[in-house]
Image 1 (spheres, each protein chain N blue to C red):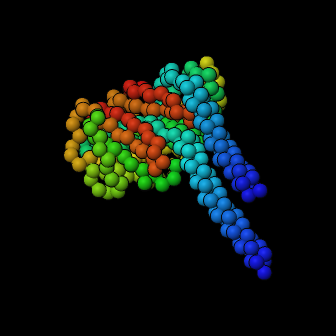
Image 2 (tube, rainbow over the protein chains, first blue to last red):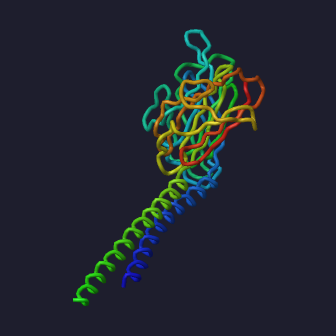
Image 3 (cartoon, rainbow over the protein chains, first blue to last red):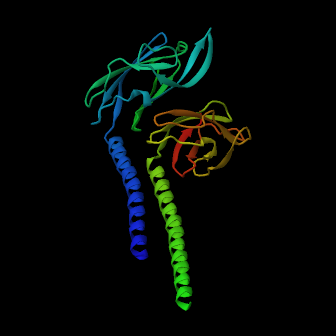
Length: 150
Length: 148
């Protein structure tokens, strides 16, 4: 009787532990697949005052919409009253009109083979003739980097 | 009389047996649950270094993103390795030199944090340096940069 109860209890505990691990494994595997199927590229870049407009193509097979969990980093030389100051900042997503140090998606959800347009608002205008670099990474991990003089 | 003593002894022995089995099951069960939770947390933790660059001759800024499914607690208990490529060594957290610093204590899924690294000696221009960030539960991400 004691042996049977012991076995039953152990089986129950083992099953519970397995369920927790299996659930995590499934989440891990689905995240890995989504990561492998995500690919974005920069199509074009233009700068108008403090507004950095970036054309993005979705070359992967995932729907990209979780912009709040994207990462946007800009490394550039800002023109602060004629002085050149280097700025390296992470920008936050805004679902409405973005202000300085924010960005938003002008085209909404980015479907596979689709084109997106991101507006990134710099804190100051860029110093003329300097190089600007930005990194955009998706919530699944893969992203794209661009550098040049827009 | 003898029968009564035997019955009492049997009850005591059975009670002791059940008690020890219960303690063993609780102990083993706790260890199994802890082990599976630890394994699950490791599977769900993922990070990547999105970008890193030197901002002065002795400091580097790095941006680390949580691309996993769970918050990363205790960021300051992470380990950072930094140095010339393939010669990285662990550096301490805080204001010491060499060292690393951040204002983030919990990194939520999707969130990006900034990490500042201070080198003890000036970085060599055009040389490649690497940083490796290792979370408290052993998940790591690395980035190699060329010093400008």
